[in-house]
Image (tube, rainbow, N blue to C red; front, top):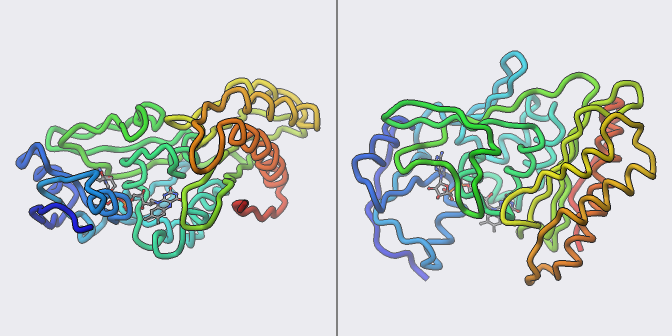
Amino acid sequence: MYTAAFEYHRASSLEEAATMLSQIGEGAKILAGGQSLIPLMKLRLAAPSHLIDIGFTSGGSYIREEGRLLRLGALTSHAEIELSPVAQRIAIVHDCAAGIADVQVRNRGTIGGSLAEADPSGDWATALLALSAEVHLISPAGERTLALDDFIKDAYTTALRSNEVIAEIRVHVPDAGSGGAYICLKRAAPVYATASVAVELKLEGNVCRQPAIVLGCVGLRPIRVDGAEAALRGREIDDVALEAAGEAVRVAADPESDMRGSAEYKRTVAGALVKRALRAALGRARGEIVETSHLYA
Ligand SMILES: Cc1cc2nc3c(=O)[nH]c(=O)nc-3n(C[C@H](O)[C@H](O)[C@H](O)COP(=O)(O)OP(=O)(O)OC[C@H]3O[C@@H](n4cnc5c(N)ncnc54)[C@H](O)[C@@H]3O)c2cc1C
């Protein structure tokens, strides 16, 4: 199906895009990679009267490590992040970027677009919440930085104001001795995951410090699992701790039954994924090279 008619505007900078949003008002939407918005428009689930294309702006796509901060321009594509040696140093970031959909989607889709969409099945919000990332927003009224946890409000709902644009995503580089992993179970590459898990932890000797465990696709927004973190914090991660974390994840998951599986199946998958992700994160925290990839079933 074709989209409903709309007026097309090309912004030369993110600042200009924010000004256009203010001037046009209701009915205006930002277009980045178009990998979520255009399919929705073709299905007539979205019908913006004005599209403001930020895909031709310069300077919105970059990956920089400055001190303890990894700064990602909102227009950075999933593929650019996947292939970046700088981003690869944070395992979760690389796992996430490399597993999104297929090459075509990864080449066009952007990290900013993914966070703005706040699709409960999207990968970036889950992965980046485990790293306590921040989102930097600009508008004609000024700028502000929000914790990602405060930015994602609900399914398809964020704290973005009508005249705001995401300019940058900021990730705190994990301390030495840290390791992370992001793993999904998918039915095929170009579809969203059935369940996903992000894990980040730090080891002091064999003792786990600062664990962060976040689930995706099993709730209206990513779920941080305090119970699983408590089962690991301050102790050695052995089989007993892994089982306790898996059980806490099963209890915390809040999925709906749908074409990807029953709610009970998704809970079981999340419980199994967290143990696999924890083993990978542990190995990485010890300095081992641990390859992970999404699982297909
Ligand atoms: C076949 C297919 C499979 C996919 N599979 C996956 C998957 O497995 N995992 C996954 O995570 N994603 C998946 N996606 C979605 C993909 O990752 C999108 O790229 C991403 O969700 C949106 O990024 P975009 O740049 O394309 O944004 P767009 O589609 O251009 O925009 C999406 C929304 O964000 C807003 N927006 C975009 N950029 C900004 C900004 N800088 N500031 C404010 N608002 C902004 C737009 O107004 C729009 O509302 C898939 C898409 C397709 C087509």
